[in-house]
Length: 431
Image 1 (spheres, helix red, strand yellow):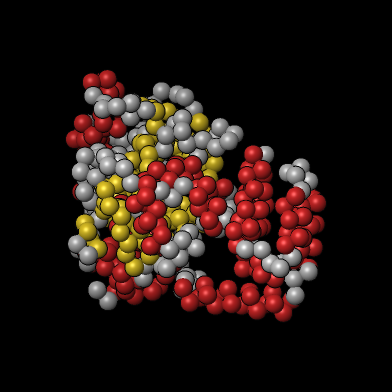
Image 2: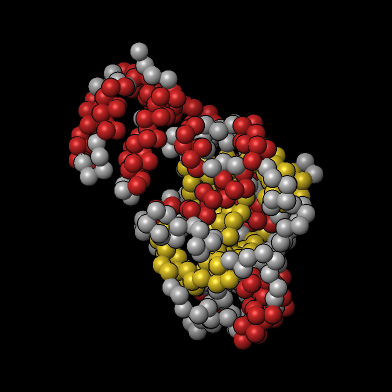
């Protein structure tokens, strides 16, 4: 008799907890994810044997895993595999022809989507007239076109050097008043990306700085805008700055996670009335600043993936432990783009969190169960995830009367490019 899904999850999660404690969970978890469509054809006894090997016995684990696959009836394996392909084709249209970002940006310009004047003044469109920019959010880097990269392809290097801010900002930082704790944030001091045809991903250099720096940057907005426009400060390694690149402006690292559910919905969340920046506007789906002390793995390593998981739990009630207990390790997180948000002087890693077995109804119920008055998010809703719905949300800046922040519109473009490709371009062209 085959076990229930609950028994499958129990055994899988127990093993993965043990593996993660040894720092070897990622590879084994990925292999187990490939078995999910075939559970009904697998011997549970053999499956438990696969899970029983302790972390050092990786060779035995692989041999046992191969034996497990060998005993699956090939005809059943093929039928299940074809059914899974059909399901993906029916629900996630192929995007084998990635869209040139310039064509989308050109359509957005034609449709009247504005872009912050400071970016024009800084000459950041000189080499690429149709660089993606929505209001205060400008694309600085794209991870592998529209494909994105997995979290394990992002490496973090930490340093504790003094952040090289302009003198006027250095003088302002001690004068600002912080409500609550002046927690340490992670500030980006450099970002290195591999070419699109290589698999090395990105290396982000981070240094600690108190939250008061963000408040001081907001207070010095006019001076910073002047220096960005005069190109005496830069946002990234960009050919637009010429051979003599000015000093980089260190910005707080933020991670914005757009959540996709199994019924092809995007979670939208309304910010509270007293939050710092964009009160009562709607995001897609959450955003978190990287905390220097909190966002570390079991080995003490700082990483933006930890920021995303913390945001999923704290803001939406979708805690990692609960997700893995209910759905296993099926969540797919991809980092898609690095943008600069002028409204809060943040360098934003835009990511897609695809939770294939979580329905929008259950996601909303989780948020309601975890909701506490006074928290950052006030309400949660959903929007259809289709080329037409995404195009309308981005161009109009709202969904059914819910006003979107610029970062939400930007995130929707990125997700639509990744999932729909030319279908999204067609939807824009028809508007």
